[in-house]
Image 1 (cartoon, rainbow, N blue to C red):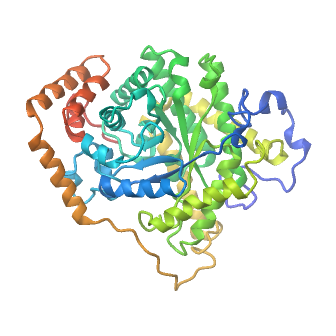
Image 2: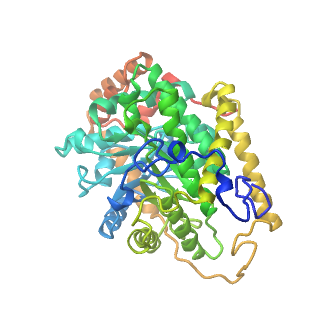
Image 3: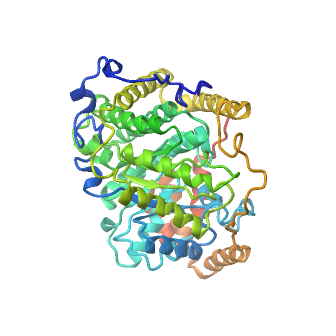
Length: 526
């Protein structure tokens, strides 16, 4: 970021006026093309939102499974078109709710899921064969996906009928977020095992959501978000190829996840540049031939880091602008943050306003009436090319370091993100970067805002449930299936089938994770 107001957050200089001279060397056939055709700059489908609006997938998770189920059904009743699950920290880290390390964290940042029984409660009365579900889960992604499959199976629904996404992106955890368990190498093995498993068992499932969101939230610029996300994508593709999968066998089910922050036109250009770059990478570097392998399908979430605790209603405006930029950039699904999320988990009222924001953009604004309405804009096309060139320079540097895993292990991503975050904070503190209600137009009085609170009694019940499950199950069956998980982890076999049998026997998330911890070890950051 530069303090100069005539630059974007990524430091791209903004001219006072753009004309044809801004597109020197630009080839509209090569660089722009048509929607639904290589290089997909204008969108991955020919008709985009004229055919169908993006999926309105509001992120939710709170307390115990039954509480989150109520929120899911509330959102579906108000017009949400897909589900997105937030899990609590113990679930993300592979600990059961009664583990000592889970104390004080159960149900706080999302829903607590310890067993198949919890997953069944989470999706009670929700038709798994017609509603798609996204799960923001990484280190324990395979476990949660298998629980979801088992719930469907126990309801008589074929695995081939369920659809959704698991984030399953560990590389960005090492770089920016920290909810990793195992070292990079076994983590990559679990990821590619999940690719292979879904390829034969759950063909409609998106096996990874390669995420720039958390790196952006940690302070990365738009250029860094594109570069680091695509570098991670390259690493995952190479790992899958090294595991013996063919490119067009798994690539059509790859998906991406980006943030959308407040620099409106830069964000739109960012999405277009990322889509074009990925199409070229997949065709030119990896030789993919299926057009679906070249399409960057992505989910967008508006910026949590752009929300303010001061004058929180202002966040409705911020979220609207960010949601609109995501749509103009061609997203396939969207979560709009609730205005109170800088304070706590969203209330029902705040969540409904966030959903209504998407619906107003989709049904009232007119932006969905034509495909890529900003395509051909001198400013947009010049900025798209600039982001691509700067991101390519990062990719070359990462490649020279040995790829994404080596760059992360060397701390390169982390250092770049920290430096960018520091510059943002400097700009806010100096007043050069204006944040309304924070360093300009302050309102010391403020207004009281309703806060969503987690019922501690429900968390006690969650711990009671997991202990009761252990006492009621067939323990010899659990022990036998966990041994099979251990044997698979020590071999080169796909570990998901034995994990599924252990979960079917009612082994818990923590127990399966502990088996893998014993075999793979735990990662410690440098």
